[in-house]
Image (cartoon, rainbow, N blue to C red; front, side, top):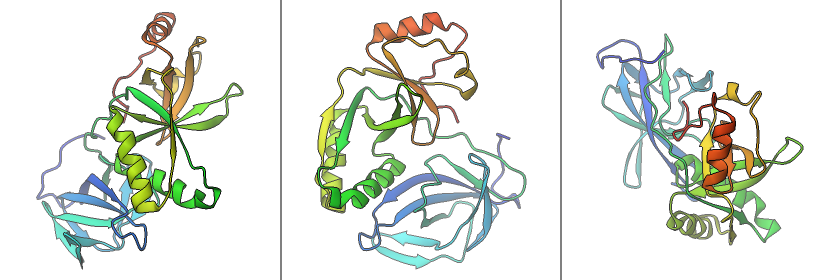
Length: 248
């Protein structure tokens, strides 16, 4: 359920407000920063992750100040705890809790305006390239979509951004932090993207200049070649809501 919980409540709840990739280049670690909203945090505690329905163990908890880390064994409402998030399960805006499931309002994700493919010309750097894209997307530095092919199979990766600078930052960080040189190929034919609710996929009437896609959390999307195409598809599907903010 969605709702409010007072900080003095016994039930533990926390909100993931930031994810930082590659904080320790020696280990390629990804740290999730959580603000405790209620209850008491204890290291290695098991919590619910309502967005995915999974159960997580909050291990390797730290309090961080600049490059210094101090192991955190407990915490209370208002405290900020950082812990390893290398599996890519957690996202910015996620809630974790014990007891009855609850979910705070997520940080909104808006549709991008620029699209490009990013290539790694060096096969020996495949692992670093894949890891870098995964962690930087988890951090929120870029959005990652996957286009579906004509056979309905998920295929090519597409990077999506609000401004050109995001692409330049990603390429710079991949080179400086992951030692990967990349080639960026703009996709100017795509101009708009909208999210869909899962139930609206069935029976959706497609048009030629629209492609099915999904974002990095598996939420369905449509990418359009031009504003006219987007408006035309909306007219052909009057009962479908094309979302400008990603659904929770």
